[in-house]
Amino acid sequence: MDYHSNYLTQRDTAVNSCVAKYNIAYIAYYDLSRNTAATEHISRVIEELSSRGNNVRIFRPECSVKSIAAGIDEFILPAENAAAFDKLVSRAIDKIQQKIDIIYVRDFMCLSQVVNWAKRKNIPIIIEHNGLYHAEVPLIHNWKSKILFLYEKVSTLRKRIGLADINIVVTPAIGEFYALKYGIPREKFIHIPNGVDIERFKPARDKTALREKLGLLPTDALWMGYAGSMYPWHMLDNFIEGFELFSQERDDVRLFIGGDGDERAKIEQLVVNSPAASKIMVKSPLKITESAEYIAAFDLGIALMNPR
Image (cartoon, rainbow, N blue to C red; front, side):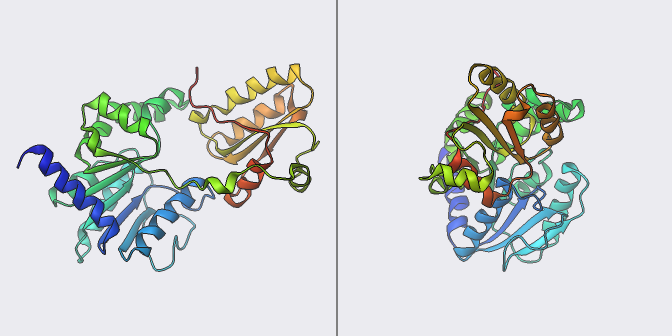
């Protein structure tokens, strides 16, 4: 059997494992106690796989959440970092008596042992990519994290992408970039939107009433906003700087920033020190259930994708 035919067979096996009744090990190195879009996305994927009749087990680091979804077996591992989690997951899966038909991983730094274990056992593996390391690395401020990211970029990332039977990407551009960068067949990348329900984010019919409810005052201002995570690659410092320049030209503009993440303290301090502080509103944390209302109240929603 040639490579292409063999690959298609593996791909069909991986995909069919998600739509038939199979034993799926879902691996997520993420703090599920956080009320973020990532937590909601992980929950929805697991619920969807389970609703199709699959037996889903989730492997996750120890956190305050007791259960991610009803009827789902959970393996909570006391890992201090991603490398430790990767090792513990491999050991935990190896001890399971029941056969595992597919490994589904939400990509994380230091992911290697789980992938290698799956390949040794000839188990199809799907890796879901929710970002692009090559865009995020230059924006990391902590030098230790940056070194680890750079090591990932030139070493383990390429290997695991190549070993995966399927790489799920949340935007086609990520798959196209990796295919070109690493010479990996494009057929190994499948674009699946990451679960955002656009219907939840339509502009409100009565923005005045909604803004009064949310405290977005004055209600007749031009409200610009961001609702999402607060990490270096979201470039919220650039966002604030740009707004400061804009607010010098127009007195009727206001800015809302809502979310949570590693950059929260930095962003809050930038706002306090900003000459436009009186025109900026920060809400952190921002619950997923609240974000749709705030977005519906904006005149303009902004997300930066490139530092240039």
